[in-house]
Length: 507
Image 1 (cartoon, rainbow, N blue to C red):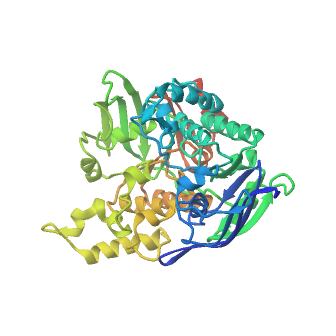
Image 2 (cartoon, rainbow, N blue to C red):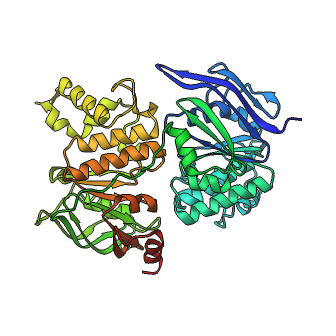
Image 3 (cartoon, helix red, strand yellow):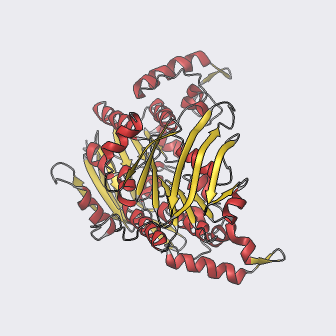
C-alpha cells in the first residue's frame, strides 16, 4: 500500500493561448497537511480543479492517482463519492436555506420520495460539533458571519465522508481570531487521519500548520519542502514563488503629506435593514494630500460601511455628519457625485462589486469613464482601446490581450483591472478596501508600488486593511476602529501590531 493518498504525474492543462499547467508532478502523503504556494496565475486553482473533477478526464494530459487508483472523473460529484472534497475561496452555500439543509444539500436520501428531516437535523449536529459551530441547525446561513459560513462548508465536506479535503484560501476573509480557530480545526483533522491540501498566500499560517509545501511557478511544479527538515522560511518560499528575492515587500515612503484635503466630522451611519442601529457611530477623521491613511480593526468594526457611506452614501439607511473636500462642505448623494468630486473607490469584493466577470478587460476598465470616451451616446472605440492599453502597460496586467475575459485572469491581475477602472476617472482621493485580499506576495508588492506612486504624485489614499503588517508597512497614519467607533490613531513611527490590537480591543 502506497504512503501517498494522491499522486499527480506530468499534469498538463491548456486554455486558449495559455498553458495553465506544464507537466506538474506532486505527491501528497496520507494524513498530512500539504500546502500549495505560488503567485496568482501559477496554476494552483487549475490544479485543484483538475484533481476534483471540475475539468473531466480527457480535458488534460497526465495522470491523477487517488488512493492507488487513476481517476476518471467527469464531475465534482464523482470525486466526492470517492472521498475527495474541495472548498473554494468563494463559498458555495445557499443563503436562504438552513445550516443543516446546506450540509446535506445534494446528497439527501429519501424513502418513497420523502425526506426524513429530523434525521438530518440530528446528523448535522454531529458534524457541527466536529467543526466547533454551536449555532442551531435550523439557522439561516444568511444570518451567519463569513467565519461561521466557512465552518458550514467544512461540515458539508465532512458529511460526505471525506478522506482528502482541499481548502482554497480558507482564511482570506477571516479575522485573526477566526483564522486561528480554523487552523486549529485543520490540525485536528490531521489527528483524525484526514489529509488536507491548503492553498494560501498567508505564508505565516502555512508554516504554522503544514508538513509539506509545494511551490508552483508559471504552471510548473518547482520544488516540495519538508517544513521542519528543510527549516523552511517565508523568504525561501517567496524566492521560489517569484523566482527572485523580494527584499523590500513594502516600498520606501519618501513623500511627506501636505495640507488637509478631506475631513469627516461626527459621521454616523444607520443599518440598511435595522434603521435604529448605528453601524458607524460619530466618527471624525481627516486626510492629507499625498497621504496613505490606513483603517484597521476586527471584522465588523464598521470600516467598510464607513467608506461606502462616504462614497456617495453607497451603504446604509441614512448617514449623518459633515464631509469637507478642500475645505468645502459637500453632500454626495450618489457614487457618480462622489466620482465627480474626485473620489475613487475599490471594493473589497472585486468579483462581486469590482468587476463584470463576463466582460473583457477593455470594457471593465472603461466602464466608469464612458462619459469622457463618448459623444452623443457613441463610445469612441479607439480612445477606449488606447485607455485600456495604457493601463495594461502601466500596471503590468499580465494578459495576452485587452480582449481577454476578466473571469479568466488571476486574482492579482483582476485586482489591477479594478484599480485601472478607478484610476481612469482621475480621482484625487482614492479609497481602497482590502486592496491585496487573496493575491500573492509578488502581486501584493506590485499593488503597493502602484499605491506608493499615486501618493508620490500627490494623490491621497485611504486603505482599509485587515493585514496589520500591510498597514504598518504602507501607512503614514493608522486609525483603529471597533464597534463602529474610532478607538484611536497612531503615527507610522509609533505603530506596532500590539498597539493596534490593544487599541481596538481595549481602547
